[in-house]
Image (cartoon, rainbow, N blue to C red):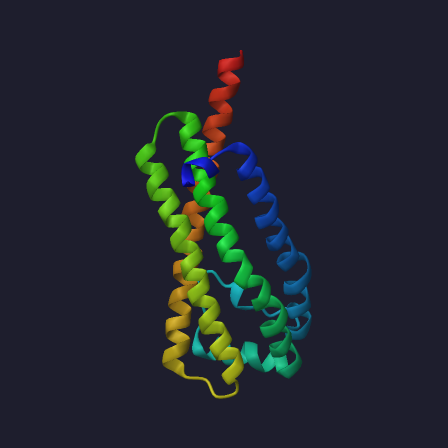
Length: 180
């Protein structure tokens, strides 16, 4: 079944959906949250994680309205995005390396990393929901585990996107050479 999904038309459709959700967050919900925090970066803007003190400062700056907005709007979109990311980038990696007719092992590893990135994003979202909904009572150990999920998500996302983009650049280069 997955082999039927690994084609250019499906990939373009998934890229449109995935990036539509992403740009909605980047262009709408994250700027709204930044207005609550007076520019203090939110959790999703901290790829290297956050400390307990940074978490408390962020939640204090969000206030009740910002926390509610984060739970009802940002996290709602961020429940959709990981699935979009997993599908888009695992299929994208498999497709581009199939087109290259090389790197089958890299393609399988890259697709797995894309799935792991989405799973880590879901774990991060679960942590953030619990942190936001329990504020002002915050467990320091829970912040630590949330921080770990954020770092793992960020790392896996970076690796998956890099594998996809490097394969895509290589495929474009090879295609240009073949046409000339």
